Amino acid sequence: HMRTQTSTRRVPRLLLCALAGASTFSQVGTAAVPAPKPTMFISVTGLDNPTCTRATPCLRFAHVHAIAKPGTIVQVGAGSYSDQTIEPKPEEAGKRIVFQRAPGARVEIAGLTVRGSHVEFRNMAIKSWSSKPTASDLRFENIKNGGFWIEGSMNVAIIRGSVGPGVDYHPIIGPADRQPPRNIVIDRVFFHDWTRSNSDVHTECLQVGAADGLVIRRSRFWNCAVMSLFLSYWGGGPHPRNITIENNYFDGGRDGGFYSVRFADHAPAFENVLVRNNSALAPFSIDTKPALQNFRVIANVAPLPAWGCNGGVIYRYNVWNGARCGPTDATADPLFRDPARLDLRLKNGARAINRGDPTSFPAVDIDGKKRPFGRRPDAGANERR
Image (cartoon, rainbow, N blue to C red; front, side):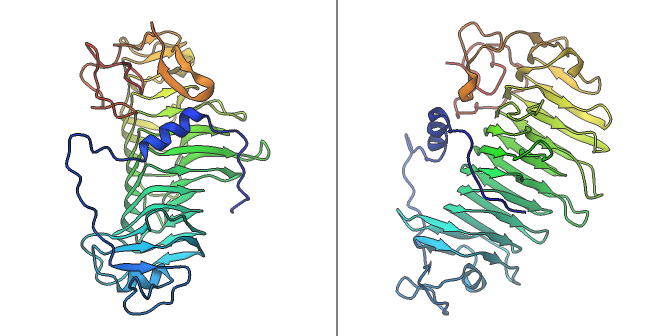
């Protein structure tokens, strides 16, 4: 289902700066902790052997993973690697086996399939990857990739990095054999340029088919053809539950889409959902057909028509451009600084300043700044200074 990947819009400099800033560690006021040294090595010119040392590196990720002990740091040399697989093995419990690029190297993997557990990938490019139902405890940190497919896996974290571009397909978090993905975290990730070749194709920056435990926070969604985030349901397993979406910037649908985020009517129910302190350029849609259990929408800033309110949702301290869904909601122009460049910081005089929920807010904003800054938190993803 892969198509040639092309970018149809230039990524604004502001987003590139934000992405670069999210990919660095701050050590101000703390002592630097030396990183563990690698003990096994991979090279595009290597040959698989029993030791995989710096002098005699190995070639295949699968081989190194099969012989590595828990906690091993594997250094990956510069170059382009063919498709790789990570299979389960009997003694997987313990610390993750970490694959990280060599200092200063450019590493690209054509494709990656993960069936094993307790594995981490750092600071490299992966054209596409998938994790299977047997996989658990996976971490992808600062990965540049052209799409991912989480299929019934557990305990998967995607931290920083970027996802895109792609044409006529999209990243998916979905079930496999009625097993929903569980405990998935997406944190400070830049989704961008997911486009379609014609109006018959349904393309989002991220589609979720089911989840039991999903957190999407401090991430940016840019140039998504239909929607930034589409939460649906398929596979016949449990209905979606335990979902938190907070501190994100959501672009509007760029190619005929109506919503930034949609909770679709394909699901029989959505349970324990928190949508909090997001900023968006298109409305949120929460369909009326699914049963909504403990579904809270708090301190978001976005356009929303009057008919967009859902009686099964608890609304508090939102700033909508067009609607007022709860008694503490406000109606006002969001006054974002530069919507065309997805700069959703608040201008002077914005109604969302000091309008967040005083009892329910993230400890930091999308940029990691402490919240609240003023007498009470701001609504939206950014805490204005």
